[in-house]
Picture 1 (cartoon, rainbow over the protein chains, first blue to last red):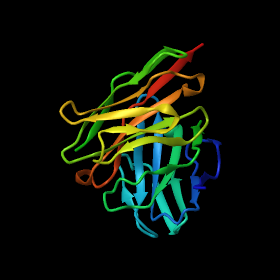
Picture 2: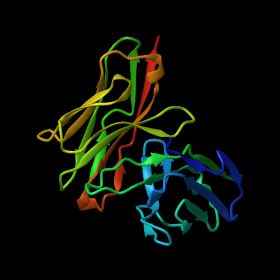
Picture 3: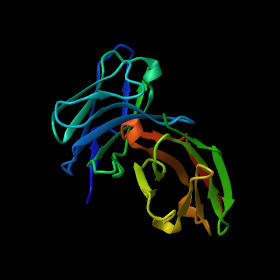
Picture 4: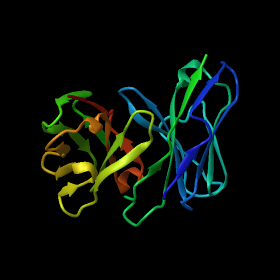
Length: 115
Length: 114
């Protein structure tokens, strides 16, 4: 069965802290994604990675960075957390197909609160 | 550019009555469209997808959606709501023109009354 796991379900951090969110997938997927989910805004893409050591900015990359050293792991880093980064963070993975329409598989999410 | 508009942020239905969740999209290329469901404290789960085959798509849990190009719509329906359908639903578009990135609608939260 397909599985995407995220290291924490809930996190509370202080303003200015460096925060690491980890995501692991066991499906050997090439593509991985980080989204944030806010009420009324749906999911917005922060960063994505087509393959190991590759990364691309999404729609809202400011204040975030990512790391993909291994195929199965994609990390989201908040260099200096701010209160406006309080949100639900969702990781996803996908194996790309010719039509680009292969579904993405999502992790359960990490609810981050920055005080 | 592509975009998705879910016309209702909240929908309330009685158990056993039909459910309609409305979605309109904008895409400059032949899109693929998805509906995802998110139950409380759970990850997103794919309900169904349209990828240029049949315009009426059947998904899991009795849901279906119809792709109407002339109306740029992809509304989700279910003939009879169940209490377990209470969740948030997202309409999603993807196209080659947008680099195969997903664009999500704002979500529709469904409340099912007994």
